[in-house]
Length: 465
Image (cartoon, rainbow, N blue to C red; front, side, top):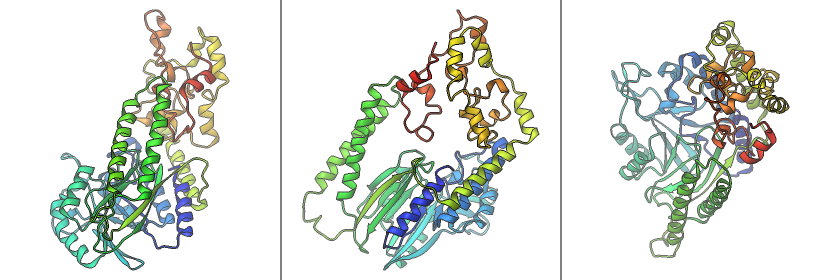
């Protein structure tokens, strides 16, 4: 939730600085981090979801698409939280089997200046064995749900927007079948934003990526009945900047150990370069391009730590974290987790017996006081924060970090070198795990450490064996 207050500030600033009417929309996958909620984290996840709703109400969203990730705590929870939402949850294909009615509003209409805009939501399918819906509810395929709705929207509206978390391939098929849809806002299951891409002459798709790392702003100039301009200067400029950023990223990866992302970045760069080439060719004058066409300017704004906060939304974030910490501090939870086996972890005191110099250096680092950092912020029971502030945790079950034994309440030796019990019993036969950039990137991701540099920061730590 950390970026919500910064997101709110940016929206407020953008709306005030613009002289045009606007819509604030979200494709979906808003409430939860995964498609299902662990039982032991259900209460914490629901507290977080309620905090997100309060923040979105303050920001002033118009509509959010329902995705299967928003159903992770079950349909009943989402229906209850819908009643507390000042914006509209949209889904045209979550249907009551008995009467055929939608459980959520399928569409909304808004007048944006002289343009009448229709917004529709589509939900992606749940796995066949899912129990998140009751027996009287189904998610219809888009081919069954859309025909009547799109016919009505195209008859009464100048511009149609689809909010969905369906795959990019399905979005392309929808665009081909329903040319009346002009914009698809895609809830991507990726950290990386989707730059606008023209799926057809009349349909463009865009998405900002998950986790709220970016907000997207699209300034649209629309002529009813027209088609999208094949390429425009603003979009081409954005693509070129993306190419430059990827080139810089590749240069950094070449000089750093653990080049796991090198091939992925290189592949993305090749795709961007091919796209730029096609866009530059499309800008060549022709009789077809001479006709009047609609256009857009798009940009993404990254949510950096140094950005200002929206005061009211920041208070919602703080209160949500306080509620989570209070929930997880209950004796039943801490007692249960403190009795868990250490799975081969011994704590830094054992390491110190043979590696006193390294332990002394480590004690001067921020790793040694990482758990105290949470205590100062009253977040020592928050399982969203704990995994990167204690020694032993299970990524698949972050709740096990609550009530950690005191010898493991810090980022200790075994975070980097692996469980030490076998090594301490027989150092010759059982070596510790080598430290790589991948080790550090479990926690030192851009969200937590915007300036992380493996080689430089490893030298600063100064405790390597």
